[in-house]
Length: 250
Image 1 (tube, one colour):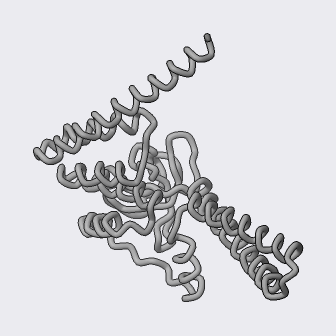
Image 2 (tube, rainbow, N blue to C red; image 1 turned 120 degrees about the vertical axis):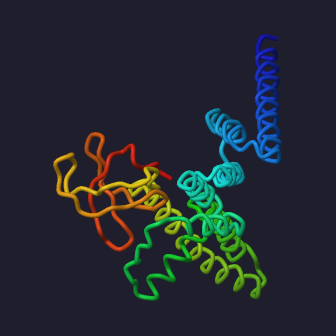
């Protein structure tokens, strides 16, 4: 009886949390419709603080920041949405639109076209989605090989064998894609500059040589950290140190 009561309590608690989240979502949407963008930001942020996240939530939060003319935070949340759903057209369009407000126009170091194509292919989906495809391909491959070993029909054996081999290759490649996406997001995090203008230093100290100036909204890669300082790298290869408070990790 005690166990049943615990299960009922957990279920009702879960329903209560979902109802609360939905109420916050409805409130945020209404605030946005009423052009009360600061209120919408507060509501969406509260949902995130409760541990819930999704591409749609970050996208809506980005829209609220954009309407509030807080471009760096709009870009930040569009980028977070893109990490969860890289192919969404609305997210990519709004991110591109927000980036037109960024002062710094950094040239990207040119890559060999095959390297660029391969990278673009990997970036079409998140690590989790590549992992799901990999697992699905592996399971279907095992089914095909099982048909090869058990079937007495020659055609089915051939389809099972070659189909199984092909899908094993697909599983291996997509697993590697998932691993690379995970490593990229975990080991070399990217960030958005949120301070209006930042002087990049040659070393992690206020006395470091001033190298160059960057502005809010710029996307950078965080390559190292020391205390309250972060080493960043720009898409053109330039590197230097800034304060942690000058950026927000995507």
